Length: 595
Image (tube, rainbow, N blue to C red):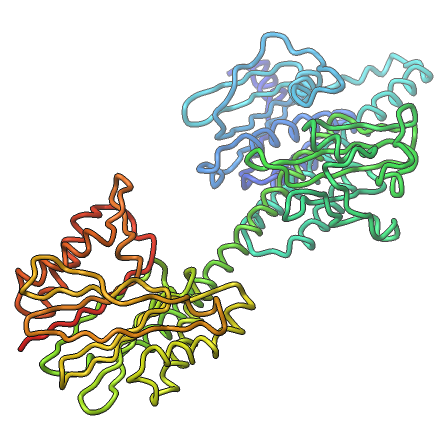
């Protein structure tokens, strides 16, 4: 190698630096500062250092901003080499990449995209974007400045250019700082979405950050009331602003930009040329200056409104700041809806647990066993449409082989009906001296229960049967309940017996009548609630008392014991109803003389 070639090699000798940064905004920012310090050691001027710093920040931020979630663990690589004539940088990213545009012009002031590429192009001599399926590499080249000692620059012109460059750099730095601050806030709030966070605390922190980044002086946040008829104030900032703003009814025609934004689903602006009406509720917080009101929705349902105000009349909000308002409030809307859903799920779990406890209590009140009263045999079935219901039955030994049968249906379903069913059970059990006289027992129970039932506009039907096994005799009385059905082998058809009176809780002085019936060997009787006779099939046809009588006769003729007859009845009823859902409680007591 000759001396000239060796000299040229020395002149072209390049130093290089390679940095691997985590795919995070703060990390790549730190990496670009390291590159700047390294370039300063290589003798670059302040102007060159500032240009390279801005170009690298833009390229590295894009590498972080557009990387998919599954590749966020891969590093952003910055490689830089410096020679005597130029500096070359390579930024490797793992984004999906993009097509480098043929022409890059300065975008409009209101545009949010394209500034970064324009800035990179402006600050470098050559740019290449190498794209492939695994990673992309952006190559930036720029010649180093030459110092011409013999030229003396025009100091005035130089100062003007420096001032212009400084102003541009300050604007870009402020915009970058604002974007960085916004992104940090958004990532922070994203991490809180779905968490059990206090809505007011979350809203206050978010609104304060939004005010700071958007340079707003005041803000008002309202949420739709639970009845959906008005906007209620959640927050007014700053704290020294009027503390309470009255609710705004959505049906009113009073001047209100909040109502207008909610109805029209569009942002409403106000400024010194088009100020707020002095009767607008927001006027108390934002009487002068500039402002914007934004209504926000989730799943096409109004959630609330947010308004930002600025006291400076000459400084309206920019498009970027309005976009910030939309983005921040979208986070807030999601958090509000999540919090409401979480509260509803919690309330549902509590209610479900309470219903389960009520169901357990109700089951505990039912007889644990069926008392023997041979030759009469008993079989029972009870099913609630809900976890708890108003149907109940009781089988109470009454001495000397007798049993008191009680079947009742309290109006309605759920916990209220179950509570009154329990009260009715206790009332009847408290009067054993009247067990053999069902009519008098019902009259006494009605007088006791009437004040409570009438006060809440409820009533109960009941059938009481005194079962005397010694004479195989039934003494029955009905308070507005389904009739007692009776079948005996000597007859092909079953029949309804007895006379019904008022349901309990309707008339305080109601009279009831009892019927005595002998149950011959092989015969059967059925006590039931209307959930059985009013059961409908898929076509909507009701089972009815007539079909129930037919089924009782068939059960008596085709079976020999009470349990088999009960299974026959329930099976035929299930066949009739098919897949139709259970809409009411169903209870039955079947009696059969097996002698």
